[in-house]
Image (tube, rainbow, N blue to C red; front, side, top):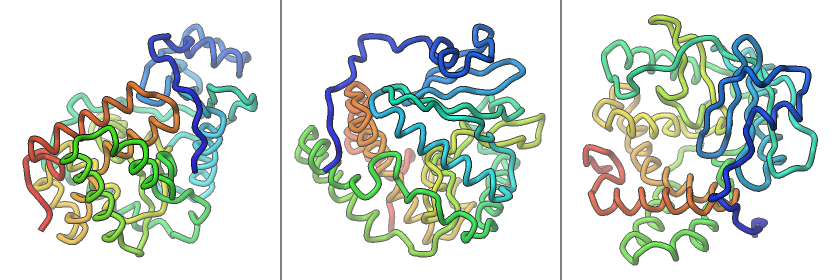
Length: 298
């Protein structure tokens, strides 16, 4: 059984990320940082300095330590693309854990829906680089879905999420989990874990680096196709992989809201859990669980 605690009061805004970063690393002037919010993190970016990622929700120290460990493993593996380098992690046993990392140069994409031939070519080249990384260098990476429970993910879905769904949606959730577990290949490769245009930075037309590697693992190559299906559809993603990988990626894509919801359970973020479950219900109702354009696995 996973550790459960009280839910985080999401009606109360978390402390300013710049204040938290200044408490952990006072040697930097965080008042000048640009602050952004994500689902599970707040981020402070200094104009000419490092980046602080501060967790939202409970168990923050453990979550931050896992993210720091992932970056440390990748930074010593001769990773073929520019990624953040780990500089420090908060040592206080607080709810809000934090990781200090180097800043990757570049700008985010202005159009995450772009599925031009050029964009698909960059995806293909990046995925090829992933597959070329020797697995032996990355055996210390956490297992797939460690960010949302790892081996306990299915238990969290069954006990905490399915009871919050209708009978039809609950049955779809249980089937989606079973389909993924029965189809995943044992031939693993490096997986970013949340690969897509939202985590790619650019210098003009050149890919300058990748960010947000806290889901990284050794896993089924379909792992990095699944989020691309969400952005561009299965037909477009079919250019990037074999038919077998695409089929598994569609099955994985069906479970992505359940992964977010399970991670929200662990972090005590009930509002985020409910939002993710709403997305799952909507996709079941609209026939878009596997693909936003309505394709289904063969």
